[in-house]
Length: 419
Image (cartoon, rainbow, N blue to C red; front, side, top):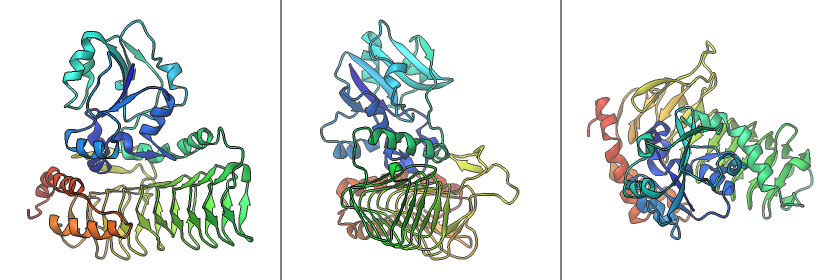
């Protein structure tokens, strides 16, 4: 039996974060969606399925894992958009007498496949999977959560921080491994983990009264900063002095974080280190927010936030929703974003007032005027930003940049941008 974590045809609901990564590499809580699936089936050999243009990237990051290839005679297909519970093997067992398709209403959660149907699927791995690929397989409904839109990741972040924390703590006897300076305040220390090499400076407050706090290796919590309730700070990241990090915040590795943040997920290598509010937001990697960049996450009429996603206006069903921002995007000082704003991949946003609530990838400008961000200039900027973290942009990274530029040309043309 082999495990295949796959992408389905609804991946594009997760734009712009999925332009540069498969759906299962998005973070919710402490870990990626992929990591949650793998820990549910810990002894199973696995393969990864992804869009064709992402295949070189996925292979380079996973050199020992087959990509878009299945070799075994039995396979458990698991949708990369699910939030896999730790007891998933009880809900979807590996052993069964027949093929079985597991659904949550109309969404594919997983499928156990062998025989002739698996042979057919092996030949179709060059494409995204859909319900039609599993035609003829008996179905069973199962209560396992899945992610439809980016705000589902934000809204489930608290529960996933708690779940991931419990899983990661299961074999740990000692929890305060890093250096805690005199004058730091640790509240509910049994719900706090500080890994080796991490530092908590004088005056910092870590309050886990209403949710666990996990400080990863070599992270620094600077003086007089406050972290409250269900917070994850990634390896090598810095929380700047006087930062206020409230409930349900996940920060990836090698980030610099400051100002006021709540209910947000920030992917690795991103800087939001200055004053300014970020709430109910999701930021990609290599993002830089200028000083006093602020996002609104609540409408003045307290209504549900409507969002432009993949050509449609979608009612998020959420009263709180801030900015969703793709990789390599930058903002100038004093930039403002309205509730439910989507900012694409590799944008440069500046100027007075609120820019549009949907900003296509490779946009340059703000509320007064927007044009296309030249692809060569955007790549050169990305190279400089990555070198600051001792990361050299590879040829495959550059090809991916150009591919995303091509994939997003239609959206810019619809808004009259010059090519």
